[in-house]
Amino acid sequence: MDKIKNIVWILTDSQHSEATGYMGNKAVRTPNLDRLAARSRIFTSAYCQSPICVPSRESLITGRYPSDLGILHNKHDHASTAETLGHKFQKAGYRTCFSGKSHFIADNLLFSEHDMNRGFERYADWDDYLYYLRKKNFFSEIDKSKVRENCYQGDPRAMKEIEAAAIRCYSVYAQQHNGHLADEYSVERCAFERASDWLDENHADPFFLFYSLYRPHAPLAVPKDVERPSIDDLPPLEWSEQDLASTPSLRQRIAFMNNHAENAYNAGLDLAGTYAENPELSEEPGRTKEVNSYDGFRIDYFRSVSYVDRYVGKMIEKLEALGHAEDTMVVFTSDHGDMLGEHGLNLKMCFYDAAIKVPLLVHIPGEWDQGERDDRPVMLLDLVPTIAKGFGIETEEALPGIDLTSDAYGYDRPVYSEIVSSFGADVAQYGFENHVRMVKTNAWKYLSKAFGNHELYSVVDDPDENSNLGDDPAYQDVCAQMQELIDEHPGKYRVENVTVVE
Image (cartoon, rainbow, N blue to C red):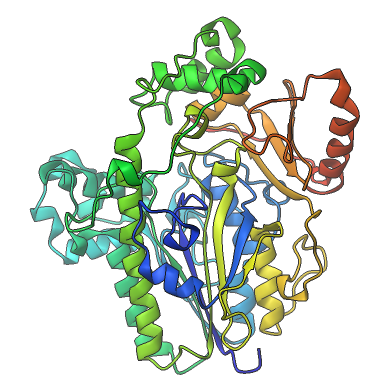
C-alpha cells in the first residue's frame, strides 16, 4: 500500500448483508455500491460484534469486543473512553473527520458531558445536523410544537436522546408531506455536505474520513423520486414452524411484537420481562403471513438502501474530483443487519444471520480492486488491525482481530457477537439484562446465555436456523465445545454491574 495515502470509511445503519445489487437483490437500485464492489474485495461472510448500534459501533471503531469495553446495549450509565482508530490516525499525523451518525454513546447520555470527538478533529453528529436544519430554515416548514425546543433553538447537546429528537423533526415533516422527506433535509445530505466541505479544505494532507449514513434504519422517509420496487422484486420469505417448536425465545419475541406492534422496540421493560418470564403468553405467538406482513416495510426499507447508494456515489465522485481515486482506501460496511421478516421478525437484537451478518467491501487501489469475492468468515473488529497495518500504524497487541490482508484465516475461523437485553423486543426474547454471547464456526452456531436455555444450530444441515438442538442430549458435547470457544475469547472479559437504563 505504498501509494495509498488516505482512507474513507463509509458506514450505513441496519443494512442486511444481501440488500445490494451486487448480491443479486432485485428490490434495490445500488449502481454506486455495485461499481465500488467491482473494484473491491467483497467479503460475503462478515459479522458484527453486536446486533445493536452502540456496542457494535464501539467495537468496530476500537477493534475490541463489546464486553471488553463494557458497552453491551444502547442504554447504559457510562460511555467508552477506549482509543479509537480516529485517535490512532490523529496521533500518526493524519487529518481526521467524522461526519454523520456516530451513536458511540448511549441514548440516555448527554453529548455535552462526554468526549464525543473520539479522535476526530472535525466532528459532525446529530447536534450538527440540527444546526444544519436551522440554517436551511427547516423549522419554518414544520409545526415546531411537535418537536423539542432545543432542536430549533439553544444547544442541542444539552438534550438526552438527541438522536430521537432529531429524527422526530424529519418525521414530522414526512407526516406533512405524504411520507416523503425532501433531499435537502436528510441526514445523508447533511453528512455529505459537511464531509465534502472538510475535504475541500484538508485533502492536500493525508486524511481519515469516517462517513456515516443513517439509513436504512427506520424511520424510512426518503425523497419521493426514489424508485419504489414492486412486490414481485422482494426476496421470498419462507418460514418454518419447526423454529417455533424448538426455540421458545423466538415464540416469546414474536408473541410480544404481535401484541405490542405499535411500540415493540421501546415498550416498557417490565412488560417485556413479563413475556420472557411467563411461557403461557407465548404459546400462541400468532405468526401468520397476514399478521406478519412485512411487504410495506420491506419496500420502504429497500427504497432507503437505494437512497443511501446515491450518497455513496457522491462521495466516490468527490474523491475522483479531488484526484484521490487512486490513493485512497475505501471501506464500506454497516453496523448490523435487519431481520426484514425472516423467521417472522423485524428489527435486529438477535443472532440470526440476518441481524448479525453485514455487507463489507474493502477497496485498495492496485491490490483489492478486481471484485474478488471472499466468503471466509470475518469480523468487523478485524477492520482496525487491517486498516492500521496498511498505513503503518501501531496497534495494541491485545486486539483480538486479524489483519485481513495477511490471509491468515480459514473457513473454520470462529466469529463472535454479543448483547445485553435493553429494549422491549430483545428483553421479551432473552429476558431482562440477560447477557447473550454467540459463536459461529463452519459447522455450528451456539448461543450462550447468562440465564435460560442455550441454543445450537447446525450450519451445514440447517443453514436457515430453524431447528434448535440446544436441549437435545445428543448434542451436549458440541455445546460444551462451543462454550469453551466463547470462554476463551469474548468470555475472558467478565462483565459486572451492567445497568440497563429506562
